[in-house]
Length: 137
Image 1 (cartoon, one colour):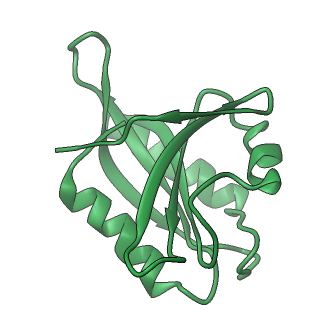
Image 2 (tube, helix red, strand yellow; image 1 turned 30 degrees about the vertical axis):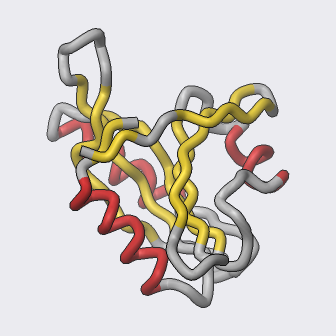
């Protein structure tokens, strides 16, 4: 995943602001044209309809509206992000199960358990978790 420092800071700030529950949102990707590599171009902060420390979900209407907005800007939904307020930024079994509904998307997790936030990115396909390099530019 290629993301600017400013966009990544927005994701981290969202996680900190929503510390009492898992934050969540969506990241738009646009093709750079170079080797069909994508880059993050926009962050959409979403509302966690569960307002929970252990689970997140974005309302379906908000997802569809955001995907339409991304497409209007010649981008596509490339990643979903959320925070883990008290655990490491590694997909939980709940995350893995949920990702089954979203093949091909990357999953960005902000871990807030340590003194400093830790951000990691994954592809989750058919229940298998593979870390993806997070390149901050």
